[in-house]
Image 1: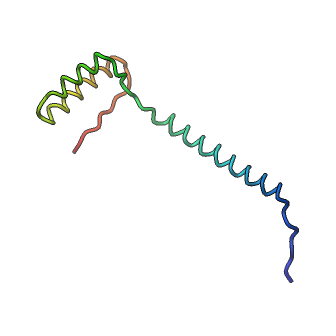
Image 2 (image 1 turned 30 degrees about the horizontal axis):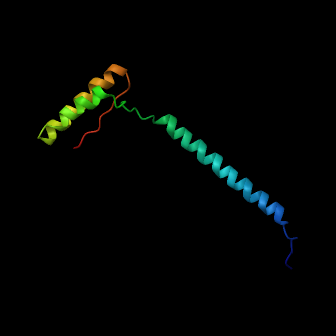
Image 3 (image 1 turned 60 degrees about the horizontal axis):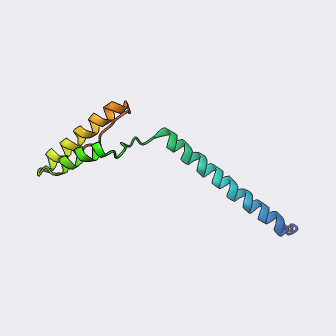
Length: 91
């Protein structure tokens, strides 16, 4: 024998759908917030002094020398702010 259940009212279904949507939004926001706290990006402010130093580096002909010059500028400016620094490098 099969049991039949009464139909769920539309208001109840709408309320459940809203609750599921709200729960998904809260969970997504909390996960994104945790990732934001775990990996803060440190950016150097584009000051005229920094841009002038980088533009001098951009005029160097060799790619390796240009990259080394830019890395040196970034390290010099980051060490003044005391920010943690990790430079990416190509193998």
